[in-house]
Image 1 (cartoon, helix red, strand yellow):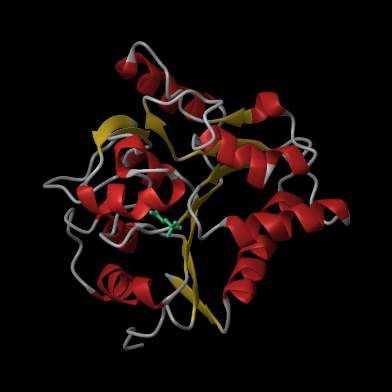
Image 2 (cartoon, rainbow, N blue to C red):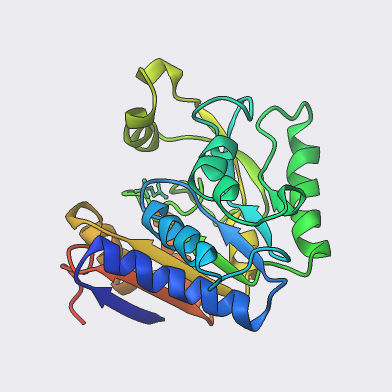
Length: 243
Ligand code: PGA
């Protein structure tokens, strides 16, 4: 694991955006695995700026998002489809047809999940997967469990995750209780991983993920087994590391 510690959230975001830009410069038709949540918003802002300044070209880039609530209409304000449009896609020269997010209204969930994994495989796999981390160690919506799930699947969200996400909704009742998410196996297949975390509230889970045991009760701990992981932290999120 490569670990970078920056002073501020802005620096973390800039570092992460530089890594994505380098990936796309080296391979203009990269498949980017993208994440939602508060953490990557600053990175997306930087990427938009870089795109305006012609420092990154999304023309031939394909994207695969980690997850989507279920059920949710893609036009709902809180869908991850809307999130990605608002925070990145509509501001850059990406071809909408090249963007992929699990369908939160799929009738046949199993088929949707299988097709999603197939689409990633047919595209040649994800070149770099951006991840945040939940307070309980989830990546994507892979919640603490007895086993590491392999493929894209439909999960019940834990109360911790529902509570963490209520800030985006009017009330707790409105937070969807399920989600479609790439499985741990899907995430582990990506060639590179870029995990970001910021803030003191992430310091303990970052310590456990990096220094603790590999345990499906801390889904992110599986990344210790991935051969190419870069972790970019602000100093608050790095505050409990003994390194
Ligand atoms: P956050 O979420 O970026 O909003 O903290 C991260 C996650 O839950 O994966």
